[in-house]
Length: 419
Image (cartoon, rainbow, N blue to C red; front, side):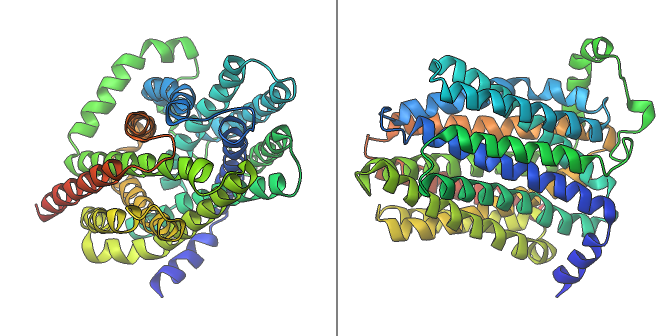
């Protein structure tokens, strides 16, 4: 198979393997950390979670950095990306230890959220750096498509594996979420160590684009952001891909909150059983992400990136209501697989479009905007879910609205691909 052959070639590249290892360890830590947060906020017996509470937690964790993300991207284009990966993961390890201490001490919620906010903010910065660095270790457009299938999807699978490991630790009898957070801190530390295998200047940007003085970089933030947005606006295909990705992410987020509430209140009366059901759903979603990595390279070669994105949106438009309106656990597991496959396929395609059409000097800024859209879409989905979902999680209206959005996205992307 061509995909297998290309994967073998990529894995023979030492620098690609190192960058991939940094991503895998970092995102495995993310998965474990986020499961600990979910277990603490949603499945703790002393807390009565609601869609509004979940939306508030997501907003606290993601929205502030989402609004500041493009400004961080300007700095990302001026600092050596290898150093960002090293120091970012070291900082997250320290912050995660702080979060564990706050959980153990039963600190006020606002202090817990502030600590988690810091960890997730650095997380988004590191992810943008990983995406912007990939073209520096992979040459050729065709191999870049394969790398975008392997790298982000492998990272998502690593996050899933980290989450499953966290679920396993909890279900094995470890009642303290702080232990899971400490596990995440150890993985962040390992990721920082692996980044040292790469030379400081390997991942770019080029020396003439570096501006090590923080004050000078901040002074040019606004001008750099405007330049990055102008550069993106001139790339119509990249703009269309980003818009399609944002809508698909919004739909996936809304349906994820619905499943979360169903696990908590409808399918079982036990917090531990609900956590187990959610763990299974996360594992099935991981299988969907893996399937996307296998299918997307050949599908993109056949349909073009936007054409494949349109196919994924159309598939979701048909199957989301067909499976979701039952509100039964089995059909919704099938929906979790299909929607994870389509959402991850869209992300892989969008990564490739943006990386291949945006100049290297602007990649950090554009991927920071990408990250902002990614997060804002998810937070907005949680807010809409808070308005539409009843306490038990069953809402036919929510499922149908998401199906309509999937349909509109499929039509718009198909038209753009036709042009």
